[in-house]
Image (cartoon, rainbow over all chains, first blue to last red; front, side):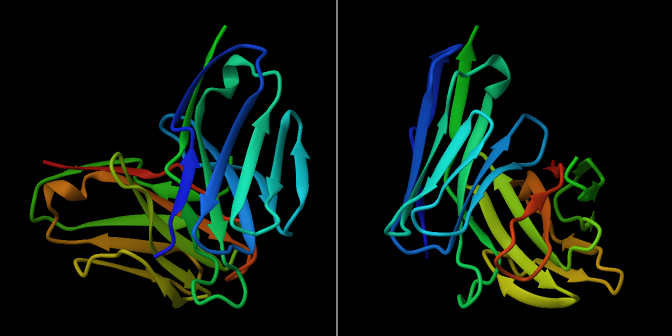
Length: 115
Length: 113
C-alpha cells in the first residue's frame, strides 16, 4: 500500500528559529494536508493543498504541494513555545481514486521548542 | 474545537470484552472515518462511511465493525478485545466522500487489561 516518509522524526530547536519538515510518497496524491496533534487531543488541520506546485500560508506556517505530486513540505517561521507538538503530513487521493477521501499519514515529526 | 464529538473519552475493559465507540460528525458533514493510533503504527485508517454507506475499508480487523446511522452519527464496535487493541481511536468527518479535508475528534483512549 501507499506509504509516506516524513522527516525528520524529531526536532529540538530554540524559540525564534525556523523549522522545516517534509514528506515524500512512492505514489501520487491529489491533496496534501498538514496536521498538528497536541497531547490528549486529535489532529488539527493546519493547511490543505489541492494543486501541484501550490504554496499556501497560514500565519507563520507555509506549505507547498510538490510538482511531482509525490511530496510536500511545511515550514514554520519564528517558532514559539506553543508550536510544540507532533506534526503529521497526510495524502489524499480524492475523487477518481478507489480510496476516496481517506488519508494516508506520515509517521509524524515531534517538535520541541526551547524557550 | 473541530466540531467532531467522540464518546467516551476513556474506556478501560478486559480482554475478551466488547465495546462501542460513538462519533458525531461536524454539522453538515456526510462522511465519517475511523482511525486507530498506536505508538508503533501511527495513524491507521480503519473504515469510511459516506451518507450511511460503507465507502472504503482499511486495516480493520474482522473483530471490529462500524456503521453510520441515518442521523449520520457513527459507531465503532470492537469485540473479543485483545491487549494489542489498546490504542487511541479517532473519528474524523468531512463534507463529502472525497476531496474535502478531514476534521478529527479528540479520540477515545481504549485500554484493554
